[in-house]
Length: 160
Image 1 (tube, rainbow, N blue to C red):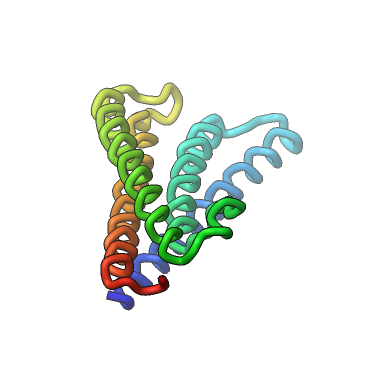
Image 2: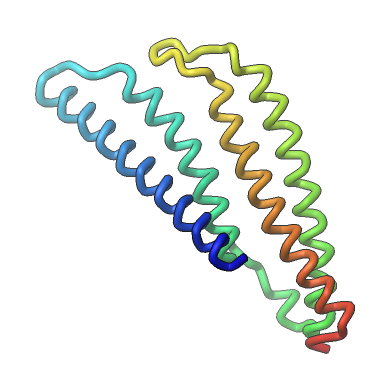
């Protein structure tokens, strides 16, 4: 399971690197053309916008998998390990509910906007909602694993 997790993480990191380098090249090329030659490539703005949305959601998956999101621990630091695990169960359950809402809403928006094409590149605008759908599913899976792990620790009475 650990090797699969590492493979998926490396795959996501690769996608993020490809997206970021593509965005950088497109924007740099457009800036050089605009200021150096008084022309531009119109499609670069739309493609960069789509890539930025995907970059944000894939980065959120990576940050969540490595527990790099902002944690406010002023309240939980004063609790016992058992109370912290119990509180984590509650917050993970609430986040799982939020992931469910994100998945349902994103899928609905993806289906509604799949036939709407962007004006210049003619890429379906629903593609942006697919990024949040995939991120919601990935984060929900990570949350479910963490939720069951914390529940098992709590049931076994570890870290009292």
